[in-house]
Amino acid sequence: MARKKSDATDIAFRYIRNQITQYELKPGDVVSDSAISQELSISRTPVREAMTRLANTGLIEKSGYRFLVTHITNPVITDVFELREAVELFSVRKIIQNGGLSDSQRLELEDMQRRFKEAIDSHAIQNTFKPDSEFHMKLVEISGNSLAFNLAKELEFMSERIRWLSMLTPARYGNSFKEHENILHGLISMNEKATVKSTEIHIRNSLRNYEKVMEIANWEDIIISIHNTIMASQKDIDDN
Image 1 (tube, rainbow, N blue to C red):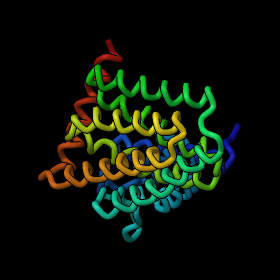
Image 2: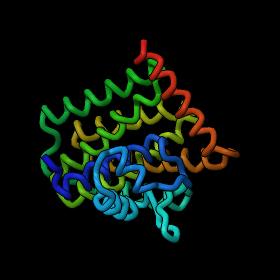
Image 3: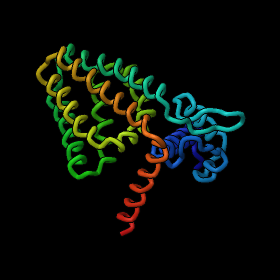
């Protein structure tokens, strides 16, 4: 059965996005609609539509007749984190104003923190990315504001590949975990002032950390090299 056009566009969108956020398509690379249509066995039209959608997220940009993967720049990171701060400060306030966390919500956040800590302790730093992302997305989800959640999802598309930059500052992970703990404790104790402050500190510390990484010479090449080494090691484990 032939795929619906909308389904094919969604498939292409997720595929290209994952290729970019996992550095399979690197900053500056050409995104080829013909190559992707062959890889996915779909026509080029939904691939082009997916590429247009991705351009709207800022992951790719049109240059003449071509689409290129965008480079991560200081202004882009600043824009992402300014919006994340606004959305997440709104969210934690709403959570407390709405009566705080339910038992199941608290347990979900605590489980994300447990997995975050396990990844740090095992030095599998790339495994922190998922529980870190889930923690922040869950805060916005719990706020109950669907528009805020949709915006947070768009910001997450950009944040996924930005997180790789912190591979150059491993000490940041322990601090990030502690900052998450402070946010969670503030929510549990229903202390709006403390929760807002902890959230603000966490977002701003993360932004400053990325700004420091971008001062490192050839940081982009180093990140790509680290990523490739991790992926090769994972493949060896999987093959064995």
